[in-house]
Length: 353
Image (tube, rainbow, N blue to C red):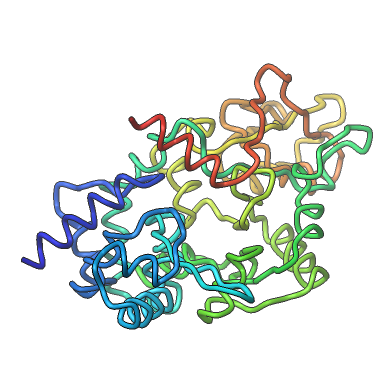
């Protein structure tokens, strides 16, 4: 009976944005059993993406109002569903598995769950990354790499995104934590991932991170850049947060490097790097900085493979000869940035039908 409940939840999660596919080994079921008790799985499968109060949910599913409130709140605290709370009311809704339930397991993560997620990465993550018509994430260049004469929208500048937030939480990177628990060595910094707005309040209430001011968030951004991490916000004008990612741990960037995926299939980028052969000294710092093999020094000149370049600007910001620069793609190659992550979800769900 409980196995049917977990399969129903898997199918429900798979119907949501991004999805949660069935695998040959059934590792997705083992992950759900690790995160959810049977009665929790049954509850989660009844929630939709439309936020509703515990009272409304109780009426819809035939559950006592007080019991619904207790159970939904407990599940929200365990990172199984999402909660939005303000001064007047609290509402609950379903959450996609990624980004969502998986990230909310930051403080629950152990070696067993990490190993299960590694197996799921091998068997199911490819579909998650390539099935969406609109990428869930995009790359923003290090700001120092953008030419000052270039007019760039505020949502294309990481510092402007941070300065516009009413609430910011700094949190550890779950990808790096999971990979280390699974036995992979990664020496990059941890507490530089950020979440904003009501997502930030959810993180803070659940002990998944700490609320910080703009200046501390900007300091974290600088630490991430110095550490060679890629700025990767949600693909939206008003992102709910962004990760500072490494190619060895991040599910998306790791997919590009390990499976030789075309970056444009899984992550949006509006910029690419360009080399000045006359200025290049062939020092090869750029090849060390690039995680994706997009830069190769041939005859002491840096050559850029635009197809592999994700437009992060990390090579530009550390080029001692100033021989590299970021170039914005032609307008015809740049679709409009969706207003919100919800719009991305809705469009990808519509395209599934």
